Image (tube, rainbow over all chains, first blue to last red; front, side):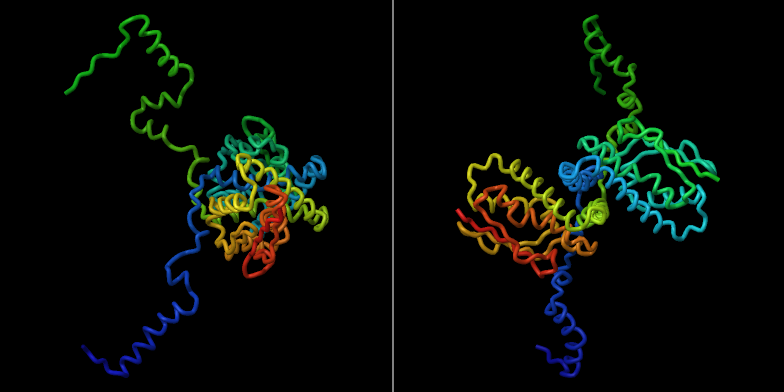
Length: 199
Length: 213
């Protein structure tokens, strides 16, 4: 049996044992157990499952609202809401962009895609024209269009996701105009989005 | 070395049944299948998942945040357009309609409509993904007359409150799932109530269901 110097023992108690005890006593259960909250665990969901989860929460509610207030009225409201939301988003994203030319717009959108892996995995596109005045992209895969068409909610999908395109580019530069030459949400085999900058 | 007998078509019938269909498969545009000829790389390409089927890499919180960010701003804007109270009424009505349909579908094979069966349904929902990762709960009372659940953690409440959209959260989740809509959809003799609610800022949720038969 060994007997410690009482002063040394007290020091060790204060510097080592007490803080450890306090950690256990003062409610930091998660840290003590070395556990992270369970909602920080990997969902294990595929990209498609994530989109289905998100739209699966929204679309049935929208369908019921459509019955209540009328489908046309709902679609108009959704278009307006979509335009407002995407405009706000672009305004916030573009606040540090001194140039409002086509190149800067494309750079900003590429940056957004790159920073959000789930967007990259939900779309496939190629740039078919890119000049100072025109940016045109052809989308050959669009997961939102696939899911919303499967849910028979393409009109809701168009109002939510596609119709705001023009408002979005105008939030970056009011001289820009976006049109869909083709649109998968409406049943075309590809989307062709054409953005023109009037100079 | 092992030599296997040749499988080349020996008869006209063999040719028509085996070789021709394979040939047409390659000729008539089945480009993906022709990747077989490219050996292992081709096989890997074939086995590569479509990118929609790739792992999202999202946590449960990321998933719910993504879903909320998809639709909460839209609902907020609709509320501003229609008028908040009126919109919340519409939202509650829509949510009740949805939960009624959902409970009907989930319980169509339930032989009993008593409180015990209702409790089984609720715990099954609470234990299923993603609720099992979003909620921490305990059943505090389970008798023939009363079924009570206490929820101590609710990710939806956390996120809706962070987005200052708790009234929308109550209309879409709490009211339909923890009050009369869910119980009445199962059996109108079960009365639901939510005396405490994390979404409203309480420290826990208490969902109580009472048999009034």
